[in-house]
Image (cartoon, rainbow, N blue to C red):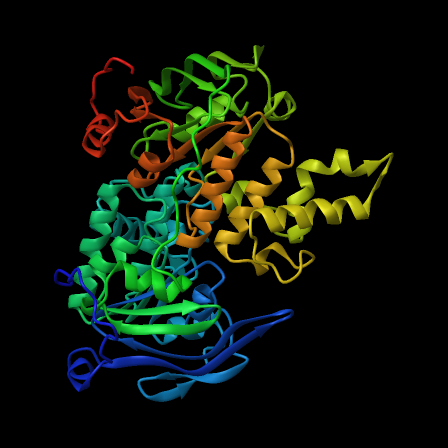
Length: 531
């Protein structure tokens, strides 16, 4: 791993030298690459050098062009102009198969797995291990899958269907799939976005091993402290242009943020304090049994949420946070038990549509699978939950729809050239804003937000956090789940900690410390006194 980084930054970091070329030779280069889509230019004359045996960090706000750049390297997209040089020679990466043939692997920010196939089948899809080239060697695939998962500190059964795994576990499968290719160039696009702190440490050990073996690693993340810790070289993108490139040892977080957004910081602070209203959500003794095994996913959870209050739920993966939201939102009306009252109205036993009608909305953890309809446009995704209010008899009112879409795009600062474009034309963070905008169109009294900043850059986080504070100031109750300790500390009026399906601690405003919150999230904690 890289050595410790200084706390002060030179005004102008020195460019890479011949010494860098000797220790970390350039294996791939983008030369004057430009990528134009209808209505937008994603990359503008990009010059990028990817070095072997090093962690090449790529950072920028959502929509800056990071994913587009990596898709070009991985053969998913082709440049409009410019060229790709591999080992100094021009190469046309016309498809992912061609890129894989050159030893290029990628772990996409959005998961690309087959939920109805097993872990082993997903790991070797299109690259099956065979006997004599005729029959798939299922036993060999299982053994290889076990070894890959063991390297990532996961003892999962290779025959488990991927659709039965939580999103964090699916992220591990995506990483294992890339490692199975023995790539010489490995692109990791937000690889830790759904991982617990323990899993992040395992991933970093794997990256250190690959780096030592000479693999050129591209590492994309919005967690800036993570980048400073793991990176050797850094390239910053803003609006499709490279605004900074340096050795990581010569920069710090303020320098990175300046290159990303043109300023040294973004204000995540709360708005002015306001009075909370009456209890709007009352949860008591909520339970959810495991589907095919003894025990509980959620066990005897009780909490209250007042109008205008933001309550953060913190815990490790598997703590039961997402399952709790599923119980509250009517995803398991026949299995969940307990009491859930919104404004005095009992919701337990209602389905999802009944919970929405009562004034509840949910931002799901997995926007790709649960939050978006990928065959629809940006505008259609935004208004999908609002169609009844936009209709006159059997027809939509286009003017009202355009007005609602324009207001949502403006308020959430969605970077969209045209709302009529496909939802897939947006970056991951802007897609997340669309999911949030659609939920707000239902006019909820209580908003459930499951990892609302997952895959969102520092600027987009500020936008989303400001929306949360403004909604709370207007009287909405917000219950949000996060794996980011600083986020839960900064945003929450109260913090609820969960572990193994239980509430293990509740901290009133000003009472929580990072150490206490982390300690309460560890498995095996006894129930403490609530604040």
